Length: 105
Image (cartoon, rainbow, N blue to C red; front, side, top):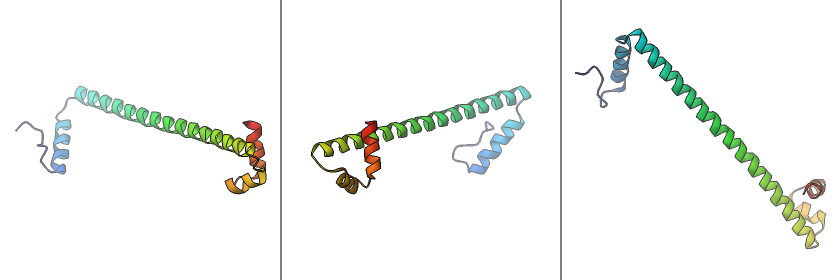
């Protein structure tokens, strides 16, 4: 037998095999394995950070697009002669929010 557990062996056997392999390693081999594990953990943390950052950027872009669409809708409704009070009622926005959107957009 090669000293490693078969892939079809139960999980506890595979874990025990890894522990035995580690015990039989030299100090230098353990240091290399430890460094590799740290590098993998750092890579995983970096991927998580990037994914989280990209998600936040996407959300911010989505909110900005939503505001732009809302402002465009308000302008279009006003150009059709619909009063701000009716736009507020239909959109569930306050008249103040509508006025602010018009000033910003």
